[in-house]
Amino acid sequence: MNENNVEMTAAEMLRNARTTGRRKREIPTIAKQLCIREEFLEALESGNYHQIPELVYVLGFARNYAMELGLDPEEIVTKIKREMGLLPECQVAAGDGAEDAAGCAAAGAKRLRAGFFARAAQFVRKNWIWFVAGLVALVILIVGLTLALRPAADTAAPVVAPAPVVAVADPAFKQAVRERFGTENRENADVILQAAQESWVKIEDGRGNTVFSRVLVPGDIYYVPAGDKYKGTFGNAGGIDVWVDGKMAPKLGADHTRKSGISMAPDSLMAGAANAE
Image (cartoon, rainbow, N blue to C red):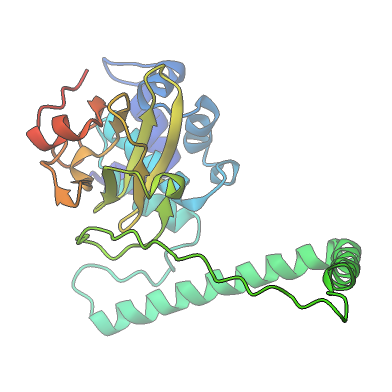
């Protein structure tokens, strides 16, 4: 690690990498290349991480931005975590004991939980009247539905057999499933994507309309709509496992390599013939 980088914040490193040297670049140009909104890149360069809606997006966008600017993505992500208070001040240096590291991690987790509950309590205090009104409305709704649906005394309620539940078997994923996306496509999906590493994924239909765009973290899966008209863009192609009809397809690319225009057609994926635009 460069000694100068130790003194610089993650935001300063990103802004310095973009605005100095021979390859000076503008934010709108990079935003189009990475498919990340300009205001999010500006938030990363100014250190205003709270302007990006979720932590997973902050870290995912920062990682892709750092790779695009030729910086070490792990160094940038670590700095951001430390600046956001996700890494405690007792962060263990290289060579310290694992027991101390576990203690630091536990302290950081405790601070995060305390902060979450404090914000939740503050929100409830500010909006208590809406909580009370919602509770009253819910009670009235339940009572009304109970009275309306109560059968007459002389009418026997028909016995309806429950509809059979069709279980859709998943393939033998390499990672434990963390969260599922695109579940509306689950019954018909020929192609399933699972993140083995953190990676930004965008799926477009034949007209170029975005049907899915998200940073997937290890264990997340996405059911791709059936058909051969969909194409994908991947911020970390090597971090995505592709399953076609229950079988793993060849990798889309190397780790930390951005690939775009990848056909999601099952035959193309299994043949390993997806061409990057």
